Image 1 (spheres, each protein chain N blue to C red):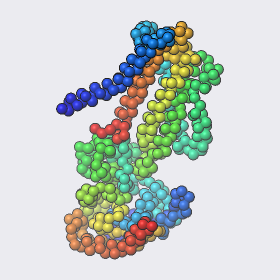
Image 2: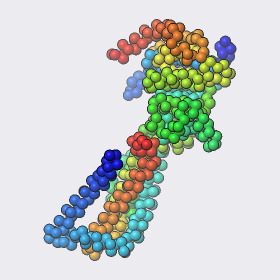
Image 3: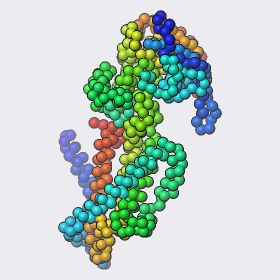
Length: 273
Length: 261
């Protein structure tokens, strides 16, 4: 319970975000008074129905957006913009199409001024680590969806960020690939290995089972405006990969589902109108 | 099997465009036979003779002069067009000032500026260069600006998140992302630049292929005019082919241009 005692790495203090709707629409309240502490080294999942502001929340922590009200602190200091210490994995990969696999992976170190030799070596190691050995000189359009996601993960790892912000990273790949990538994500994060410098993960997903399997805590958001509906501790042992078919996981998924069912039903009804 | 299919494909890829050229040549030859005044429509062998004469005479000098005009006019036009596009994309105020000026000047043919260009530069290198510059400026500006404005904002975010400075985002994200559009604009610019060059040399220069046409016209040598026109067509085609080659090698990463391996 050391982690719970230590100071939060990310603190959201009554964070609200309001957007101007496009084409002359009114103001849209995406998030309302979100308060949340993220503990160093924890794996936090955020779930909720579509339109609940999960991605907005992640963009705020990434520094792509700034809050309309409230404050977001990273290691005690306000977030003023994107930074390499907070790495992001985007839903649509966002690989640079004109750079090869190696070129994408080494972009972070390159941007931070690491010498050519050192960053090439590092990129090569990371390509191997995520299973892209032999594909180093391919361009993104020559890769499968799963390989693109591995490349995006390696690109994120190259900067050794303290926080991994992941926006539905596995939503666009098929089921088998998703299971494999979940396991690899856990392995790369350090699942089951107690370590002081393990990165902190904020993982946005719409898969309840994915959230339960991966996370230490699951934050459930309600929609319109996005608010925290529940924060649920997942008391499952680690490593998690072997627990995939354990009944306990299914029980927690059911419990979570009962929390968000009404919200999800409302979301479907509204979209139907 | 595969080999013969490849051969057939290769032959077809050359025969098809060639058949159009042959049809054109045959049509011209027939016209020269039935024309009341054969000096106006000289037969192919006469044009060929003029071409050989030209090749033994000033042809190389004419081509070098024309390419020099093109390099000066297209080079400055393309670079300025690209810089203006970057500035317009970056600063709303610049766009607000430049856009209406560009929209006003763009539909005016470069040829309309010939009298003013001759007054400004006198007969010489200046007129064709200015005309090429003017003609090539707008296609690359418009296309590059459109390309820069369409850059996927997620890629910019990704670069910023990875630690890229503002300058690095421009040079390593915005420019490569806009490169396909820049190339589309450059090819258009080169095409209209080549057209403007001939017009400028025809009336405002004493060197180049356009000047050579005017020279032959004074001697009423239609075969000389035709021979020069053929050369202009071939070089114009080769220049575009060169740019296409450069495009497909630089855009190897783009599924729409370079294709897969």
